[in-house]
Length: 369
Image (cartoon, rainbow, N blue to C red; front, side, top):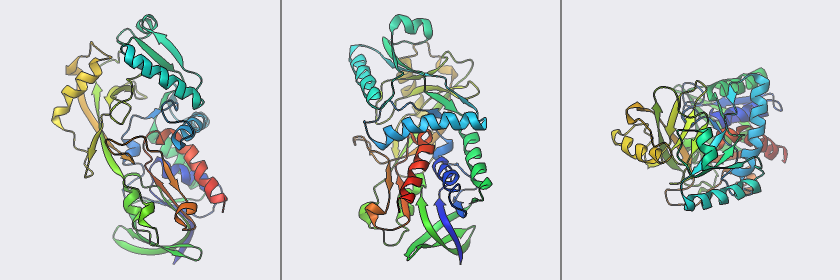
């Protein structure tokens, strides 16, 4: 039986960030993923936005780790020459009711330590973004965009430089608690392997609930129900009419269909929110009209012929369609009584922004032991 100190299940951006962090402390870190490469699911099918930390309730993990993670991420990208652009974002309101919501968001952001927002009126917005229709907006200068694939490549390279190993096409079959960690059984391309680990970290995103059920002795009361929420993105052909990101007031258990740019300047709109029962990246043909209606509220000169289906992503949410806010869950032995086990559930947005802060938080939980 092989032994490792740390087994990380899931090589999305969170698993890779944890691997990079823990490989500084442990000599034997193994990262596994059931897919053919790293970051093939939620981590590569999103808006690639670095969030400011505006919306989340004060003192929530999402608020604290987003604000902390944003600063860490910009610093990390600068040090390692990862493509990033602090492009800024406008959170727009149309009409008095939405402006009241905008003011509540401004106060919430201040409570979260986001103190760089500025209020812009309609005249200022017309000068700044002539194609935009809005009566007011909050400008967030610390919101940005990142090349998430290059970021994940760097995290993996850092981990491997510290002797960590990544093995693809390998999934966890079972984990059984022992006196000093876990005995785990893995399926690696059809071959069943057994090994011992001291620390087991489940950060499998969409599959975190299913993986948790493979851990013997873990009370089902500590395994929350996960909801799969698919979001679709349309690309917009030609030159972008916007110089920065445009977000409507949050709605439908998400941040609304927003306008974002990638590092190459390509404009895209999305995501919407569609709860699904099965993992399926299908792009329904009838979505375009709904997107046009929502986008036209802040972009009235939208040319619908330039709007083309691009891709879909699926988010692992703890809140169902009609549920209130649900925070990240980073669950340790203080909750489930299994020493060495850390389960991460519901790491949806702002997971990418928070990734380095999440990794630091996980390391702190391990060092408490």
